[in-house]
Amino acid sequence: MQATIHNEKLTLTVDSFGAEAVSLKNAAGEEMLWGAEKEVWKRHAPILFPWTGKLPGNAFTYKGKTYAGGQHGFARDLEHRLIKAGGDTIELALSAGEETKERFPFDFTLKSIFRLEGATVHHTLTVQNRGADPMPFGIGYHPAFVIPFDEKHTTEDYEFRFDRLESPMCLDSSPNGLLSGKCGYALGTNLHAIPLTDTLFANDSFCMTNLSGTKLGIYEKDTGRHITCDIAGYPYTLIWSAATPKVRFVCIEPWRSLPGVDGGAQDWEKRAAAAALAQGETYTTTLSTEFAR
Image 1 (tube, rainbow, N blue to C red):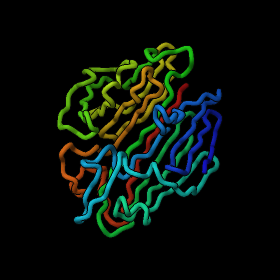
Image 2: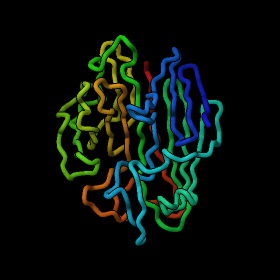
Image 3: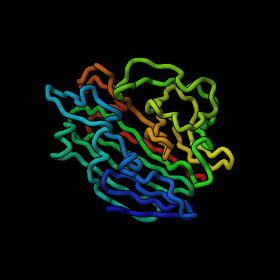
């Protein structure tokens, strides 16, 4: 089921499958989210929960039992309950049940609220632990934005731009998506911008930590049109695109947790988490994205 809301600047459509934004158009009717073309990348803007990235051996253990787990958790691949769609807000929820407990042995509710404010989309995720056991979990965002913005521009007309000088420390996860323990200034130091090229993501994503600013955006250099994510408070921010001859989209991904460590422990309680909630506790995070184009 899909629901659509709009204001004077944006029209947003969200699918209850995955609680995923599947279309976002500006006032001119231009589509700004990636169209999920299967031969390139089949998603638009998935939610990452209850972990981000990959797990060692594609599994984890909890209380002596092993649970198989693919990349980025499972919230993006399940139907969420549509609670509200009207005015400037869409609200959905996913609650634990028999299907989720085969993958993640905890009682939880994940709420997803999309709210329009002018040219900005606020996407709030709230996790509640409804079980008796402490619940460690990971969470993150993975929106994909169409590049180029129009037919007059090419890949090299764009750059990722910080709101202050940054020397991003990049955590290595090559070649299998698990952390190798290596890190370095793979993108350089004292950067205001990262030029976009068709080969930037030939070796996959860049997972940046130690960022001191609050904004990261993709900018059209000659016009200043941009899409900017508020990354304040997120310990990790990734940039990524599919390895194609020409860049078709870019992702800006604020995460609260990390992939597993190559050769690391599969014990869920030893995994680095966004939080470990006690019974009844909740955790809330919001990604605010401005579409100034």
